[in-house]
Image (cartoon, rainbow, N blue to C red; front, side):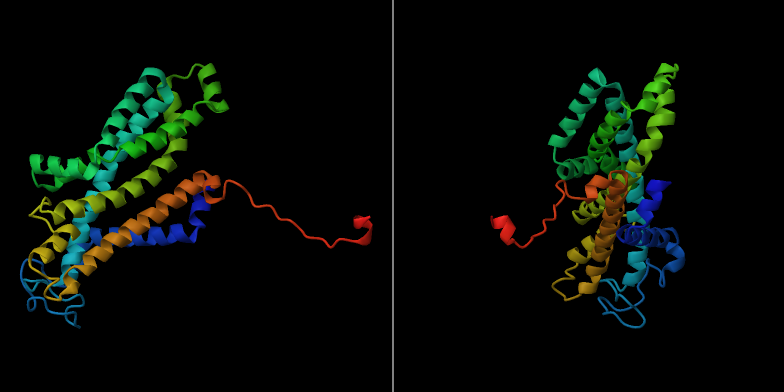
Length: 295
């Protein structure tokens, strides 16, 4: 609770929570918020922003505001679902590596290093092309290739926790590994997992947009990435229709920014030293030399 209060007192964290919560609510109530249907035109092709269409229209005359709201639903779905997969895998492997040590840590570290060597985005492109262009495959591809950083962070935290006095006392009283992990390790690692989940949401939203932009998104669903890809294919830039590209790009940037602010705030609350310099500046007072000092 003390760490939670420390987190909520940070203005940057509150700003990040507001941004992510706003887009999450928009995604949850997207069908109710769309001013126009997205399956048929409601204006002229590449119509500029106006009172009737606040964000203009795309090449087919579909209202851009409705498309951005509908895209939020699928982009945020991919972000949270892929983050859940990544944090679940990375959290389990990190706890095993940090708590067990020896062969467990060696095995997990070797597997993690192997995946870290491979560039994530090119491998995502290959796997997305092989598995098929469905939203479920995209979630799995992004989640299965985003757990490595979670593993390293959790492993380092568990390393320090297992040497604490309360863990040693629990072991001396006969507590098993599962009991110690469930009652003593997980409660202390949970805030860190929350921070990593939010940070992974940002990267998952970005990767989904990247895959959709090169034509590997789900063609049956609207996302921020597919909106940008469709605008690029239909020459929105050369037509001067900036409103067909800028709104979904701004949404992606805001979600990434909000997630970063939350994740950074949670990590600093767990480790206050992250928010300060490693070497504290010393204050020196200058005093005027007197005649006695000179003697």
